[in-house]
Image (cartoon, rainbow, N blue to C red; front, side, top):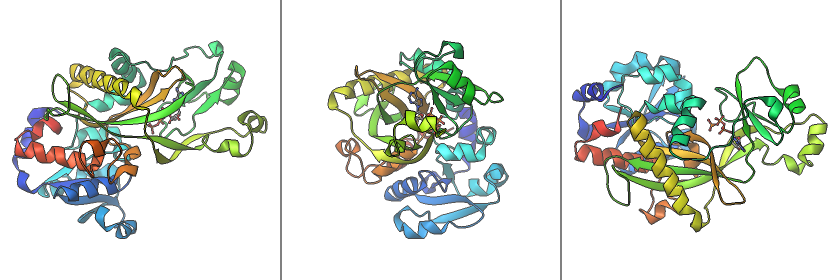
Length: 355
Ligand code: ATP
């Protein structure tokens, strides 16, 4: 979607009266909470009916629910949503529930640059972007006969690590792989995982400045993945595998974490390079994004994935993180998104952060 269209979409909007909207899942409590703190109206898009669990969290409950039959039909409701002056905040599940095609077609002002979707959802393009930015990624093993150390096998389009498996030899790979699905084989990077939550503003120039705009590190987390993260309570993985019990990588939660301070310069260099390359390739990764990394024993980062919108790992930090507290008290990623919108409204720059 070009900036001309976004300008057209915004023509009918009363920008003093915007409503922040998202799908009721993933990081929606945080998004609504942050929006309310900044004085926005909020709207929760839900399937079937009002979600009762929001009653338990009044400060994260949207002011209004918008009930649809199916998220995939969202484009049927465009006119009604436009009348409500809605700005869509996409999150990880948002794109998954709507489907990438519907998301790209959606004629609603959306926070961030939708062009990023094709660069992050295709593993070849993702690698072109990240390696082009000088980031080190796990090696890819093209021919499974060459497996001579632990690898992780990832199916295309699998979400939240579902179905991924680890193999140490070709024979093990061959026994376990589902041959009817397409997959990539990556070196299994040994180390500790850090999921880094950045925020890139193309319109604000305070703090850590880039050529155009500025970069913040708002928080970081580690994902809690079942069964890999706790399977050793039953015995060693080798023992369990002999019994046919294989660890899985399904995300069930997020754990707050901080990193040794001496690694922070590298965190910023990586974030900066990823943003600069994105500006060159497709107009920029705008707003929140996350680099999913493993830090090796040599204190080197290997990035196995980028998520180009708010990630659920920011949820432990609704009241701020050890990093965002050094920027502003009580600053979550959800709130930071709302602030960016407020700043853009004030300085008439909405079309620079919406698509
Ligand atoms: P999502 O889209 O939810 O981020 P995904 O399905 O694309 O997830 P990945 O994030 O690539 O999957 O991987 C799932 C998990 O597998 C990671 O959180 C991490 O624990 C582990 N993992 C992935 N790649 C590697 C790697 N190269 N080395 C070690 N562990 C890895």
